[in-house]
Length: 151
Image (tube, rainbow, N blue to C red; front, side, top):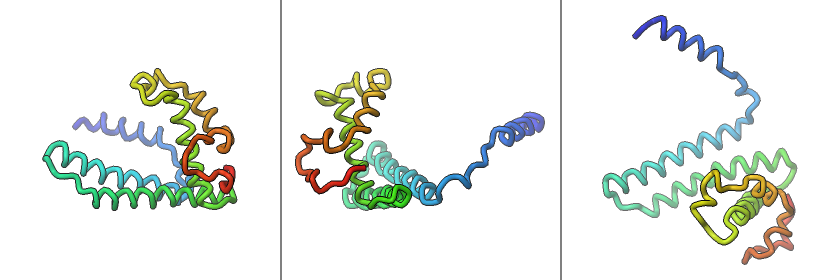
């Protein structure tokens, strides 16, 4: 390898490196790294099913989904601490915001056009997610909004 090229490459890395790790909450780092690791495990299951014909083991999937939920809840707890609310309020807000976003994106159900980046109206999705949950989710069955706190 050309030593001059390597030296220039390394100098560029040093010049462009951003050393802000101290500004990131440890629980957030732990959660994101854990989620990435679990997604890798799910990808391995998919790869083995697609390319090697392995049977998908639903018990194994449930284990991995539980691990994903652990890491998601870890950061929901961090957010709850910062926002001075209960963790279940944050977890509920995750569902509420996702439902509102998807209702704004797919008004009549999934379409490929609305799924593409050019077919999305990100502003409408953001607006939907920022509306009070009680007003936006009246049609969600099985949700007792009277007992839910806002977030």
